[in-house]
Image (cartoon, rainbow, N blue to C red):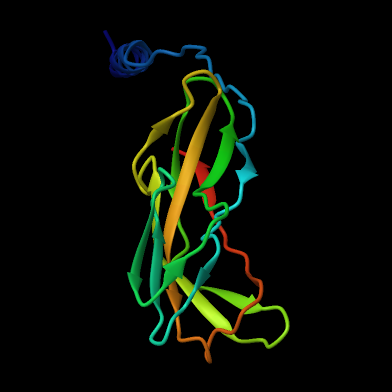
Length: 169
């Protein structure tokens, strides 16, 4: 064999071996669009009726709707409630709750005086995964209302808003 024939043969074997070291395949990709997560307020967070007394104090509402009073605050007859929210989305999906990171300010409608809400707590707990087993879940929110004395917090309606975030995991 001459030298050119040997080179051609080696080149052919090299190219053939290289071609056999590869494989090509057609693969599949999938995606599933699920229902958007939504929330509605079924019941507002309501600390109820009270008088602050000489030194004020605090009212704590638990996610179960239980009300505890501290300081010289005295409660009066009437409604109080935990905040209740209906979260809906894809059945079986997991979601988390993010509670307000700062105080919420309630403002007296006539005087502009304020009370602060903090100590947020929820059921299911904030940061824990909750399951939308049938596509919906009730979330309950509680918090602490900090109350000044009667001069700082005169009689009347105090109102404010707060932000909750519900997100798929």
